[in-house]
Length: 210
Image (cartoon, rainbow, N blue to C red; front, top):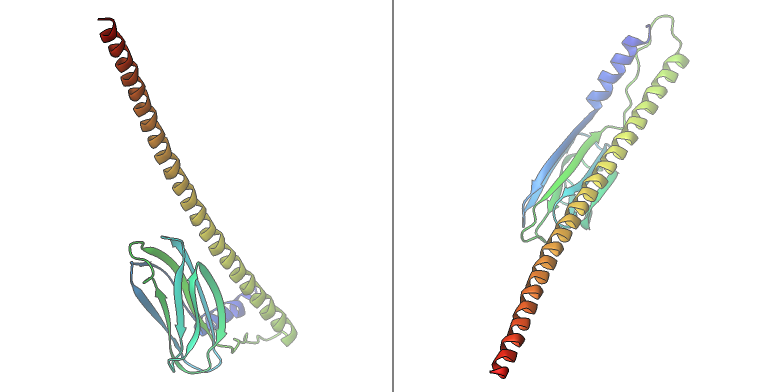
């Protein structure tokens, strides 16, 4: 019980150091959409994750541009990405998705942008607790935070794989159905053609006897 208040204080101070945005955006054909994050100080850690959940070939072009209009990273026809980089300048960072390569396919993109300062929150010392106990509790909390982040990434990865597998299954079902319809039409056509040929031969034989 004596660690509950320091634990709450650490979570409160830790949440103030991290700003995150998680969204799902529908990217229309021939559209370029940009999203922005503000970095308040140099040395901040910026995490950027995205995954194409549906549409086309599950790929998209992306570009990350820094405050000085310098391209930090870019990629073409990528299905997903998970990056962490250090911001060297204070200012606005632009994250852009480009679907200009698609003329008719719209795409759904899940993405998350998080800005975290490198400064660590410190647990307040209580009377009767040693710095070693506080440090051990702090390290345990940060390990727990890292494990939760790993679980979150794995969850996003498996969600993306599930959506793509479902899309493959639906595409296969449509192909099987279309193939079955075409096969049925061909069978009916061949049956009608055979009946027509047989009747033609019999009618020709009767005329020969007459």
